[in-house]
Amino acid sequence: PLILLDPGHGGVDPGARGQKGRFEKSIVLSYAIELRRQLLKTGRYKVILTRYNDVFVSLRKRIAIAQAAKADLFISLHADSIANKNLRGGSVYTLSKTASDKEAAALARRENKSDLILGFNLNKENKSVAKVLIDISQNYTKNESIKFAKILVSSLGKRIRMLRKPLRSAGFTVLKAPAIPSVLLELGYLSNRIDERLLRSFKQRRIISNLIVKAISKYFSTNKLFVGHKSAKFGF
Ligand code: ZN
Image (cartoon, rainbow, N blue to C red; front, top):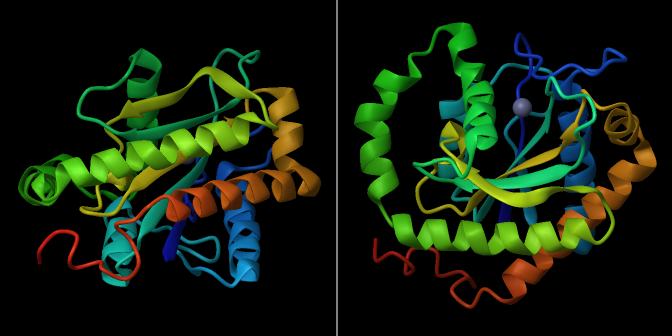
């Protein structure tokens, strides 16, 4: 299986900022690199990152990279920031037209802002492209995304703090690659001191990456549709 890892933000888009000044863009990149290392070590996966250094990559470009590579799984990595400094914990999001709650909708708006920084008109683009793209094998992709999200939540929940309702959905642009199961993982809150400290820790990064690798392995071991029949799945 080919795993597409998508460290959020980058370049002129720093993402959230921790109290100690660390940017989300650099934290999620270090997670993607560690995760890649661990995935390659299993000898079972191919791994591609949407960015390997501190550069800006538009959300549409991220989707295009996943499509061109014919990825089997897309994982977008993020860390949030919020006014309530007590809030901490991870969460996993899948794509949905209607957000699971207000917080999820607000988060999707924050994350989707990325492309506006360089002046891409996402909404206009979405109307023509996304409608066609999303409709294709929508149900399959949605079900597979939720299946993986559930596995990921239960794997992470064994060792790290998760939000009370860790499985959520909202209209994240970056999760719209057609026919590729996609989830967005919010590793925690940079606005919370404990989460920020953990997210900057090398040890924690190794632990979390290991839990993600376990979730990926579980997902593919239960996924009978896979095994090199990528085109057969959808009949094109
Ligand atoms: Zn983000």
